Amino acid sequence: MYSLLYVRSAVDDLTARARIRDAAINAFAATGFDATVRQIAARAGVSAGLITHHFGSKEALREECDAEVLRQILALKVEGIGMAPGESVARIAQLGDYGPAFGYMLRSLRDGGESGRIFLQNMIDDARDYTAAAVKSGMVLPSRDEDARVELLVTQSVGGMLLQLSLRGQTDFSNGAELIRSLTGSTSFALLELYTQGLLTDSSILDAFVDQTAQSNHEPLKKQK
Image 1: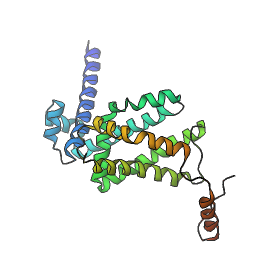
Image 2: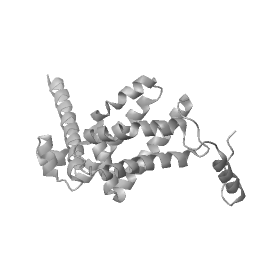
Image 3: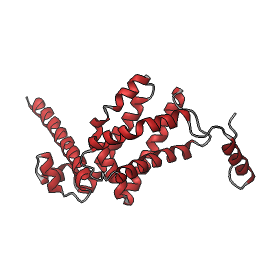
Image 4: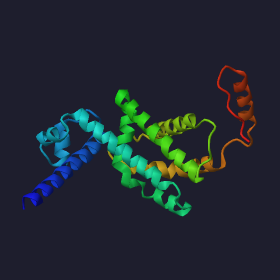
């Protein structure tokens, strides 16, 4: 009986911690990182003291929120590797399930600061891993400078999303699901066309750049065979 009670208590403890974390993700996305412990506690339906018990400080709670959102993004990307085309397209309509994480990501990147920079760097590091897996699977073409490509793709992607939402006057991150629907509805075709068919009609400008790089003090890039 003691063992059963101990296990139940441990499970309840973990459930409360996850509930607080998820409430904090929503609170930070909606009102920013100035959201108070009391506001987060009210969303989670717990006491402020329980948050202190589980996390010690709001800063530690934010770090756990960062880790959870990054985990969700990574899992979503890895899951997409090797999917059939029909499955990949169908999943676009399901991205609203990641609304809270999406709103949190946008808030962190827009607010910036050292925490935002670290969050972005972690996104880039994760992208390096899942892009390598996509290349290995044959889904993505390899690059002659993988690190530069990954950094460019991530920063252009998140920066582009922030600018497009700003252009539409959508600066409220409390409804991440609605923001995802707005973006996927307006950008999915253009992105897929660009990533699949490219933009320039031939490689002459790239070849000229590689030749100039080889003549400079920079480390030369190999020409594409």
